[in-house]
Every structure is written in C-alpha cells, then in structure tokens.
Length: 102
Image 1 (cartoon, rainbow, N blue to C red):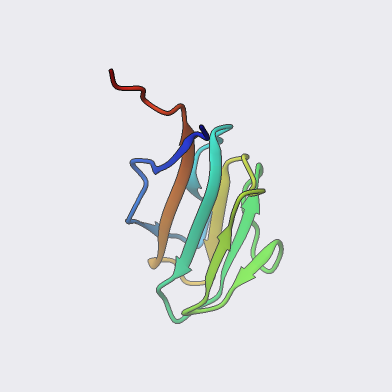
Image 2 (cartoon, rainbow, N blue to C red; image 1 turned 90 degrees about the horizontal axis):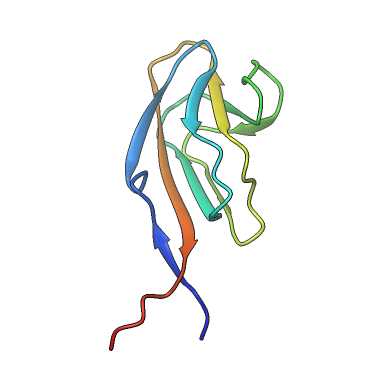
C-alpha cells in the first residue's frame, strides 16, 4: 500500500515577510507538496536554498497562490518584499510511512 501524505507543523501558519530575506520553511527532504499564499497587497519574491533578493526569483503577486506537488523543492524557502510586514500563508506536506495497526 502507498504511503500517506500528512501536513507538517507548518500547516496553516502565517509568516511575516520582511524587507530583508525571511526564512519561510527549512530544508525538508520529506516534503512532497507546498502551498504558498500571498495575503498582502505587495509582491513577495521567493528563493530556494539561498537568501531572497528583491526583484529576483519567483514573484508571487498580492492575492496569488502557488502550489507544488509532488515534485516540489526540498530546499529551504526564503522570501522578501519591498516594505516588510506582509503575510505569506504556508502549507507544507510530507510523506510519512503508513502506520500499520494490528
């Protein structure tokens, strides 16, 4: 039987993105899906594995949602915005071994 996919502790969290690079999620080799929702009125720039830089990487417009599954990045995710204090909603999904009950 296949393994089950579970949300991690990051599920439903909101990360405040600053005008300097902000850690969104740490590297996670078990990650099989991620959803990021820009709950602000400003563009948030995403970077994978390295610090985020203004006007580079993936631009997530205000109100936009970005989802990856199953081939999502396993690297740490960072974000940045122009003015700071903007909300990015985060959902991370990991694949864990199925628990067998007897």
